[in-house]
Image 1: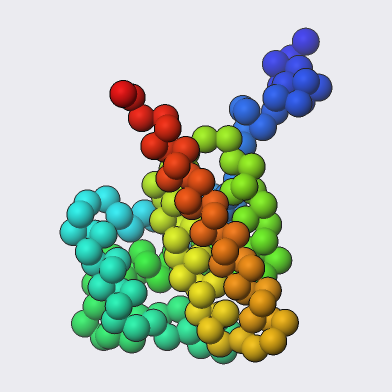
Image 2: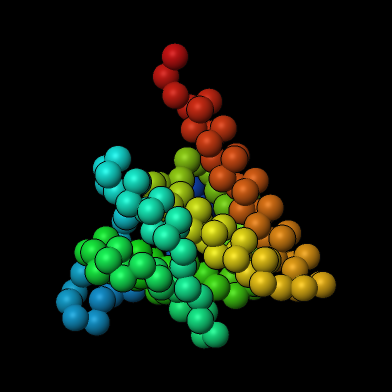
Length: 165
C-alpha cells in the first residue's frame, strides 16, 4: 500500500504533513521563483530592530495595511520584510485568526522561529484591533488575543520540556 494512503487511512497523515500555519508564506513571489517566506529575526540585532519597529508606532489604515510611522526606520531593508510579513502573510480577519488559533492549539511540535515570529505579530495586530473595537467586537478580538497568547505560552513550555537535560 502507498505510504501516503496508509498514513491517511490510519490518521497519521498530520504527522507527515502538519497543518500549514501561514499559507500565504508559501506563495511564490511575483518577481521570482522564490517563496514569499521572509524571517525578521536572524540575530540579536534583528530582535532589537523588531522591538524598535513596534515601539516606533505603527500605522494601520482603513484597509488594514500596517506601516511603520518613523520614516528612518521604515526605509531600512528589514522594514520591507516587516511590511511583507505584516501585510502579505499574517491573517487579518477574525475568521483567519481563529483558524490559526485552532491550528496552533493542536500543533504537534515546537513552532519554527518564523511561525513563532508571525504568531507574535498576529498577536500585536489582534491587540490593536481589540483596542480599536467596542462591545461584542472587542470581546471577540480579546478572545482571539488570549487564544494566541495561550498557544505561544504552550509552545514555550513545550520547547522547555523538550530541551536536553
